Amino acid sequence: QVQLVESGGGLVQAGGSLRLSCAASGPTFSNYAMGWFRQAPGKEREFVATISGSGGGTSYADTVKGRFTISRDSAKNMVYLQMNNLKPEDTAVYYCAARPRILGSSAAVMYDYWGQGTQVTVSS
Image (cartoon, rainbow, N blue to C red; front, side):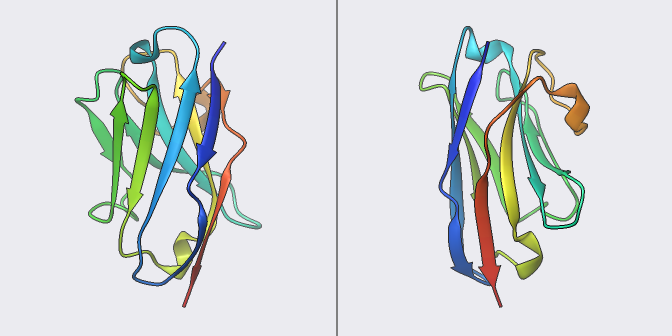
């Protein structure tokens, strides 16, 4: 069983930056690929970024590519999402997710464990 707790959300002006953190507890963290997803009011949950168990492979949604960076510190059981040049359309609840595979996925259904989410609000 993996438990995930996100933090780092908040209110920021357009063009600003935030770093989200996800603390994971459970066995063998490096065996899990991790992902970040987000859900805006009235919209479906959408893929943001994923990172492999080793940290060597990453993938991003086109909407955040070049602005967001996913990383992990397996020694600390942590996953991060550095978000730069934020836009109002990035406003959403951001969720951390874990998948018991080495390779990540952009499909939410492929993840078994989810955090409670952290709110990110970007003002124009």
